[in-house]
Length: 295
Length: 340
Image 1 (cartoon, rainbow over the protein chains, first blue to last red):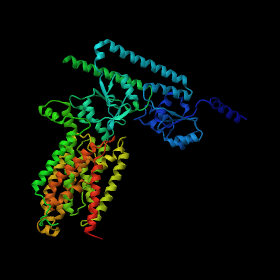
Image 2: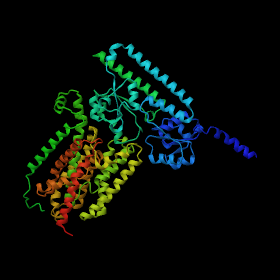
Image 3: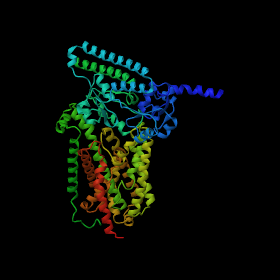
Image 4: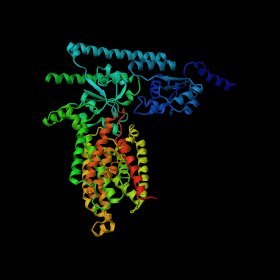
C-alpha cells in the first residue's frame, strides 16, 4: 500500500507536465548551447559529444554536467526523450530513424544573423516550455543591441558630417585555407553591425567563399579576423593564415582573433563579439585619423 | 646502349642545355605572370628595381617568386635524382617516387609538422625529411637486394610507399589540428600554393649539398655503364658510389618533399625523354635532367593555375596525367625488349 502510494506520488509530476518537453536530447552543437542556456537542468537528457569540446562549444564546461551522445539513434532511443533537437545538417538517416521510432524531432535552423540568433533563442525556449525565460533573455539582448546602435550613431554625430563621407574601415575574415564569409553569416552580420566594410562583399561573396592570398594583399584591408578552431595545433592550412606577406609594411592589417566557440554557434555571446568588433573598429578609425592629420 | 656508340639523335650538350635553360627561364617568367589577380609584372619589376614599396612588387616577390623558385628547385631535384638513380641502378624504372625516397620524406615531415615539433625550429622539417628519405630508400634496397631486377625493386617500392602513405594518413588523423585530415592530398599529390621565401630558405642548404653530391657522381656513373667489375678495376667502388648517390638523393628529395609533398613521375619521365639526346651517357644526363625537371614542374604548376576549379587543383594530378601513360609505354617497351 505504502509502495503504491510512493509510486503514485513519484509518477504525478511526470504525468502532469507531459505536454511540455521534460526530457530533451540534442545531437547538434548549436542546439546544445541553447539547451544549456534555456533549459532547467533536469530537462536535458543528452547533449552531443561536441558540446564538451572547448574549441567549438561556448558552454563546454557546463556541458560536462550532462550525459553525451555521438549522434547515434541507438544512444537516443533508450533515453525515451519527448523531444530530440537536430541540426539542418544532421545525418538524414539518423533523423528519419528517430522520427520513425515515434519521437518528436525538431530541426534548429542555422543562424545567419543576430536576428536569427534571437529567433532561435525564442524558438528553443518555446519548445522547452521556457517561453518566459527566453523572452526575458531576448528582451535584454535587444536592449543591449539598441544601446550599441545608439552609441555608434552618437559617435558618427560627434565626429561630424565629414566622417560620414569618410570610408568605413575595411576588414576580411581569413580563416585557415583562405575561407571567408559574406553578409549572410553570423560573423558577416556582426561585422556589418559593427560598422566595418567587409571586402568579401566586393568579391561577390554573400555567404561562404574562399579568398586568395593575392586578392587579400591587393585589397589591403585594415583588419583581418580569424576564428581559429584549435589554436596551438599545426597544419599547412593554419600556416597560410600566418604568411609573412600579411605582416609586410604597407599591408600589415590589425589581426583580430575571435575564438571559434564564440562564432560557430549563435547565442547571447554574439553581442560580446559585436562589442569587441566595435571597439576594434574605433581603434582602426583613430589610427586613420592620426595618419591623416600627419599628412 | 653503350656510351661508345654515337646515337643519331644525340644533340650537342651546350645546345641541349642552352635550350632547356631558356625553356625553364621562359616558364619561370610565365609562372611569375600568372596568379589569381592581374598583376602588371613589368610595372612591378620596375617598381621593385626603383625600390618603391608597391603592392604589386610585394605580391610578385612574396607570393609568386617563392612559388616559382620552389617549382624550379623541387623540379630540378626530382629530375636530377631520377637520372642519378636510373644511372646507379642501371634500371630505367628507378625514380625517387618509386624507390620510397619521396614517401619516406613525406612521412617524416608530416610527423614533425603536424605534432608541433617543428615549432622548436623550422629546420627540423627538411632535416627529418632527409632522414626519412634515406631510411625508406635503404629499406627498399634491403628488401629488393643489391642485384634486384626491375620487378623486385618496383614491388619493394610499392610496399614501402603503401606503408608510408598509410602511416601519413594515420598520423594526419591523429594530429591535433582539425585541418590535418584534409591535407592528405597535399602530401600525396604535391602542392606549391602560398609558400613564402622562408620556405625557399629552408629547402636551399640541403638541396644544394644534395645537388653537388649527385652532380659529382657523374663521372663514376659513366664508368658504371661498363659494368660493376670493370668499374671496380677503374677505381669505382659500387658500394661507395651507392652511398654517395643515396645520400645526395635523400638530401635533395628530403628538402623538396618536405616543402611540396610528393610530386610523382617527374623523376621518371624527364630522364627518359632526355636520355637519347645525351647519347645515353648517365653523367651528362644529370645536368640536363635538372633543367628538364624544373621545366616540367613549372609547366605543371602553371597548368594547375590555369585550369579553372573551385578548389585548388594539386600539381601531382597533372604530372601523373602525363607520367602514367608514359610509364605504361615504358612497360610495354620493356615487355617487347625482354619477352616472357
